[in-house]
Length: 172
Image (cartoon, rainbow, N blue to C red; front, side, top):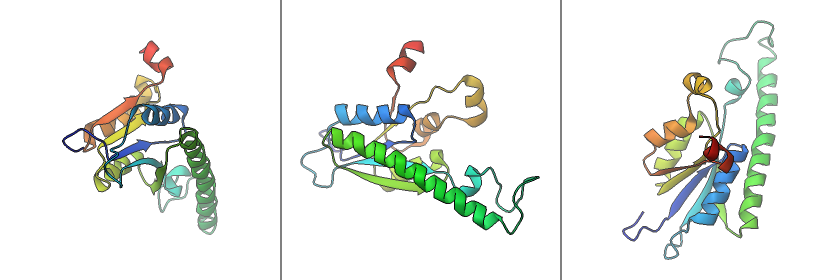
């Protein structure tokens, strides 16, 4: 952010959940980019899991009853193609929201662990603000799985806004 408080780069992380799409709507409705900077942008960021993680495989291991060593490349390719379709659908939904608001955005897809990759993108793009949704996972799941929004709040090198849905906010 510059001294006047104008935003030049806002990253909105989307994962396909309605909470992330509500965060995108909130950002588009409530945040204004610096009009004096021609390179100002909203960046819609989606982090896709690597095929081995999405398939539940540890690299180099075959689960009991899973595909044989010869089938693994085909299995990974099928998972990768499926993830690409999911990513395309998520970005199409996000871009539709942006076009409804008449806002141009950049889209970025990164493969890896969402917590780490979102924070890396914030740093690499010199983001002024990160906006993300918050899925209401219970305390037990959060203890075992961790919370992407909690991690990013503590590790991103810019301010973070967690946009909760009205339903989540009233029950919290």
